[in-house]
Image (cartoon, rainbow, N blue to C red; front, side, top):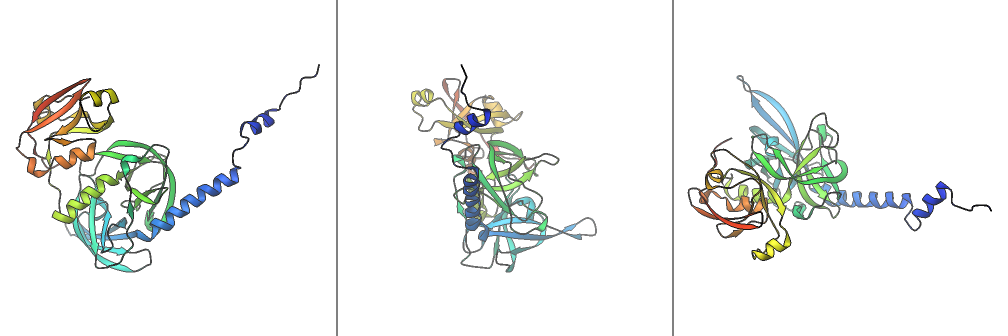
Length: 335
């Protein structure tokens, strides 16, 4: 009796029956990327800086990228792009050039705000970086090595990474992506498939492939707001490194917590207020001074300069138990 079966190629063909042809998939991907570029690229700027270095204050030139934050000329970039700049120049997407002034910078999160004397600019639309999931399509636009408006695409490789800033502080809740970044991309936007900016490109790991990082936009827009208001960001600190973490639903409900996430303590500085108060690695901070802490940004927001020296009630989840600690934040020492 002759056996009638499918060949390997036929089996593969049958397995993907009904799936769109590869050409259609690539066309859809291309349309998604170009739609993001059409929406975001008009807001991306090239930044050129002149610095004074050395004993003779010799002028050195560098630069990076940025993007329009508000229509009246406020731009976001990286702190390390404009740090100690003697002068700052900005080139818009249409080729027009402006001098810029530094409004403020925060080396601890590598975010800076500069401003140009222009109006009716096309500002980006900001997304919500907390909604990101690994595998999502992202597009980076910037000026690597001075090549204006260069586009790269990739995916979100991971969220809630920790990255050490050039000032020495650990930046929490960083986005890892494989969208190619190079020197000059720093300060440019990382956008999702809707064309909403969800990160500020900041760093790559040298001699590595596809290891690139962006500051989460939720962090960036909070810091930018403080810089626009005060020109700097002063913080109290309790001495922890933390990342966003999920709580088991049954635990959140049992303790009547309105959110199922908190700030997971992954490190504690020796001699810090947190260590003195009895905080431990693995604890999840859920409230500070009555304010809900559902992630890193919420913890940063509550640890303001005004909290310095003030005993604050801190609620944590340790295992399945909710514990209340009294912590006295201190003004964070310079790095």
